[in-house]
Image 1 (cartoon, rainbow, N blue to C red):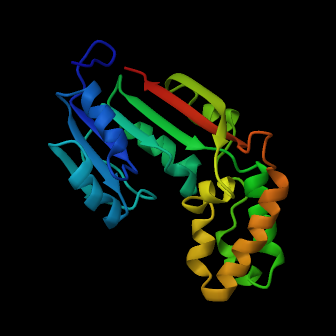
Image 2: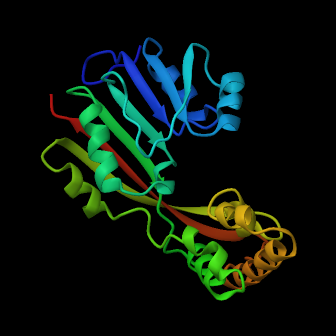
Amino acid sequence: MGSLNGRTPKKIYDLGCGPGNSAHILSDLFPEADLVGVDSSDEMLARAREEGPAHTVWKNKDLSDWVPEDTPDIIFSNATYQWINDHEVLFPRLLRAVASGGVLAIQMPTNFGALSHVLLRKVAGEGPWADKVAHVIREAPVGTERFYYDLFAGEGRIDIWSTEYAQILQGEDPVLNWVSGTALTPFTTILKGAEREAFIDRYRAELRKAYPKSKDGTTLFPFKRLFMVIEKTA
């Protein structure tokens, strides 16, 4: 039985739950809590119902304006809010929804200053497709540690840290493959056919120069993530 500040959590929300990977961990840590997974993708929620932990409630909601109907002990989110703007409004609202003595725990990739993302914005802004994709170019959707600390100052105990992982990747175009399901997706969703392939080809060429292979054929890809855990004042 898991505990939080000496008590057993009764209600936990997993925001941006995807196929239920994190929900399994939360369920193992706090088996007696009611667990709710929230996501805006029908496809991910369908997988979560098949692959996620049993006795979990799955809900399709837009997280840009979501608030719980009750007062959870834990609101958790892993790698979701980098896709959503207005953190200065959203995150204090989430913390207000948490029970006194509860926890808001959020992780977001913050690799937007890395060459992978800088070059993606460069290719998007310089090609014949520039006007089509201009609205999905986002310079810095995740703020600094100071930005988030200031959001929560005075509301409870705050732990904020960043970690850069040295991802050791295999394959011919490993960085392209890595970002294909994340940062690249908004662009490839808009562009079609030959234009889409031309965009990817130009981006691939830039990535190959920026991330050369090591002597053993692998590619080193530094990747930074921001973590924050706010324990609300009881």
